[in-house]
Length: 358
Image 1 (cartoon, rainbow, N blue to C red):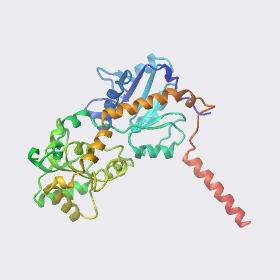
Image 2: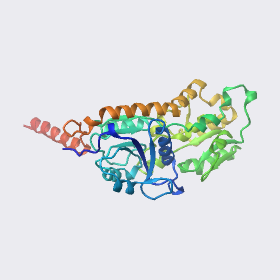
Image 3: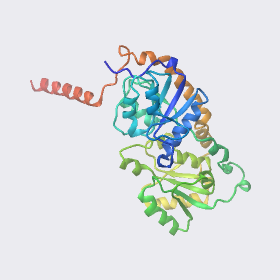
C-alpha cells in the first residue's frame, strides 16, 4: 500500500509555508513568490513562514516544530523549494502536506494523494502527465499590488499625458542569454539606442521599468542549461504593468500569457538583424507595438492578488472536502511511474511481435 502522508486537514488551524531562509543568500523570484503566497493565504486562515536551512529571528524553525509537535499536528504544510522537495516530503511524513509547484524538471515523484498546486499551466501540464491521479490545482502567480498601483500605463491615455522615458531598452542581466548580453545589446547600442542593463539588486524596480520603453527577456537558455523550466515568468508581466513593449522568449510558462503579435513579440526571432529592426521600430513608436488595452488589462486582472485569493480559497475548500479519501490507502488512486509504463508497453509490444512471428 502507498504511504499515508498526512493527518486530517479538517482539524488544521493554520498553514505553514516552508522556505530555506529569507536572507540575501536566498533572495530570488521563488522566495518572493513564497512570501507573497504566505501573505495572500493570511487573508483566508492563519499562516506562518517557517525556515528549514537556517534559523532566523522572527521566524519559526522546522526542526524545532517537528520535535515539539506530535503527528499529524494541526498545520497544513506548503512545500515549494525545488531540489529540497523530496527531502521535505520525507521529513513531513505523517503530516498534512501540499506541494506548491513552480519550475519543473527536478525528476522526483510525489506520494499518492498529495495535492499539487501549480503556478502555471505549463507546470500543471507537467504534473498532469507525471502524476495524473494526484489532486491537481492551478493558482497562477500574482503581481504584487505595487506593480498595479504604481506601474505607468499612461499609454492608454492621450499622448499629452505620457511622460518621456529615459531608456529605450531595458535588460536584466540575470537569466539573460549570452545572445542578448553579448550580441544584441551591442548591436542595439551601435544602432543608437540607449540600453540599460540592470545588474544586481535594485530597490525601485517599478521606477526602472516605468523609465523604459522596451523590455527584453530571454530565459530559455538559462533554464535549459539547468534542465528545468520557467515556472511562471513574472518579469515580462511586470514590464507590461509598467507600459513597456515586451520582447521575450516563449519557453515554458511564458507562453501562458505571452502571445506574439498581441501582448508581446518574440525575442531571438530568426536573425539578429531582424531583432534589431523590430526593437528599433518599437522604440520609435511604442504605442503601435504595445498590446491593446483590453488584452493587457485582461492579463493584469487575471494576475491580481484578489484573483489569487479566490483561487486559493477554492483549493483549500477542495482539500478540506477530499483529504480523507486521498489519504486512505484503500481509496487513493495511484499514478503509474514512467518506468512501469514503459516496461508495460515494452512487454505488450514484445507479445504482439511474438504473435506475428509465430
